[in-house]
Image (cartoon, rainbow, N blue to C red; front, side, top):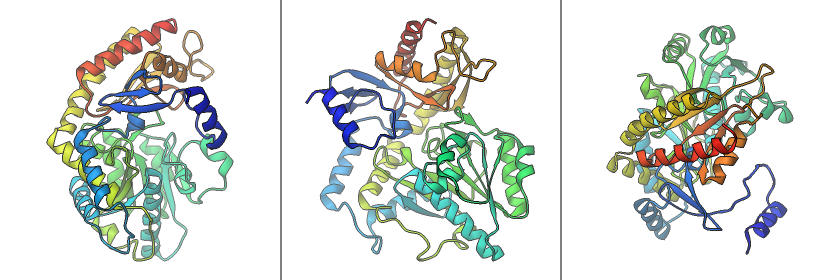
Length: 411
């Protein structure tokens, strides 16, 4: 069947909530994806920071095949071995004490909200608590996670959302303090904002937030759905700051493509929040996805994936800085490890511009024509989030393709 007819079929039957490129991806190998026409694409998006091990990793695939031949799913009324092993490893890696497996990052954030609200209710015996989130954040699209997402464009059609959510300016302690009162039960933030332009939390700001939480029995929730699992050059980005959250959420790279997320808590929260009957997930923690988690941890350790992310992250940052100097339309680079962003100049009216009025999505589309997959971030940034197996050669090829796209656009 031809690509055009398949896309027409998709438009006929799949709810149109995504603006998709007019290609159909069919297979992948290493850093590359291939469409139904056989065209090759160097992937610097990794399925939105999901495919940490790239595509077609033999050992990862074999572990999943073995699990399929054993057992795919059991009810959570019973234990299964892969989930036990995955829970132990995730607790060890995060230095948390208990974890709960979900199907996605959005669901992990939903669980984190419930944990915080239950903790505060048990402590204070009332429901009048508030949670502080940050402008330009993105935590998901379900009603709870959307409520803590600091972007009104995403929220507007679905109001009213959860009550008691306040928003502060990211990396602005004064703004945060203005929003805190005696009923604040939690502060949630992305350690590196994704849709907010690949913006890391400032080190001093992170330290102060941790102290504010400690001094006021406020729970610190760190959303590491995109920036966790080695992407920053450490297993979790908060480890760059020598602090620990009270609650964390993760997904994406956790399963390398199998649909899984998780939230974890420290002992203080674990003993004073959710109990039997408070939360559940039919598929959460099933044997197949947890076998995927275990495979990821095993391969990360054996192949020094996080060390590669650190080294290649530094190389990627250097090459993007050179790119920024070459093209003045890129006004800054920011990020950590293998999650980097190039910011695009804005006009006085606040619109993202190039000399010819070209926004980030136009660069992404032109790069795709040259066989390079990039992602936008917000309305004024390019996002670079390759598989963590990326090499210097891959980065060099990416830069060549980006150069070709920029030249086509007149830069």
